[in-house]
Image (cartoon, rainbow, N blue to C red):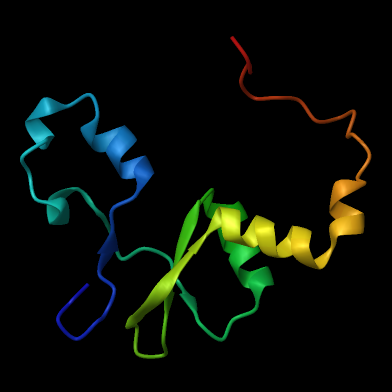
Length: 110
């Protein structure tokens, strides 16, 4: 974030996992060198559907929220979107039938 509040980059869990964890040489570098610069963001007035589309298209877990001047107003984490949807549509969400076409990308469990 710049002095005037404009968003210039984000440092996420994904950045830690892909750029830092297994690379000790990066452990003392400034965050500014490792962050994702000019991240996609949403205006605070955009609908939640825009957040869903952006998260889905970019495989994002968090979306920065900015005002019309690009100043950071907050962060919208994926789990809050899920919570919002389940609060708004509990009957639909909790009673969805299983999808037989859905295949897990990774193995779960021990």
